[in-house]
Length: 311
Figure (cartoon, rainbow, N blue to C red):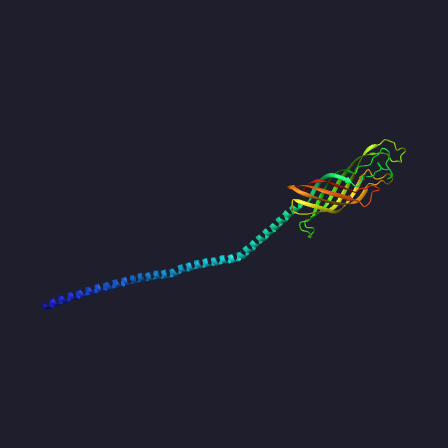
């Protein structure tokens, strides 16, 4: 009986040990099965951390690359600034030079325009007076005496003419500042009235009918003219000496019929700019020949006023 109880107790103990071993084995197997999963999970976490660690430097590299790109761009801009600064400075200098040239051209143009106004076409007229009356074929017989019924010509009369002044220099070629030299061409008609003419004694009779005749001269003058106060409205001037060709009508005495006589020309006057390029003036001129034209004296003066137009 006792043996049976011992056998039963031993069997229960053995069964218990067996079940405990099975349970331990099962736990070990479960632990063995769970261990790889945990390891795998841990490895996955480590990989993710590694990736994160590796990814972080990649973003930093990207930021550093962007920073380097920005720095390179700034450096390039600075280089362009240094490069373009001289170019900009050169362009500015060119602009300044161009402005200076434009200002010079404008000043020259203004000066030329002002100078152009010193050229003038004028019309003048007034009183004329010869040193003596003209001796002509119709009122003097070979200088000996007048024919019957004739009279001498007059010495006083009037004149009218026109001319042109052309400006040559505004400072006498650098010798006198503000003193202008012009060239003048003047055409002037002088009327010395009428006289009673008769036939010369070479004809059959001195009592043939007489008639009234006009006596005149035409003067062509070329002369230098010196004008003072360049740039002023009031411009006095002088003609130191010029050349005049006198043409008389009627011609000289019967046996020496001539009508041309050269002479010297002198003058002085003043012009005043009243408005824009319009001038008024007054002048006195004298023509002098050093001999007579076959007994005819062509010396005389003219005096009067003028109106001029600058161009």
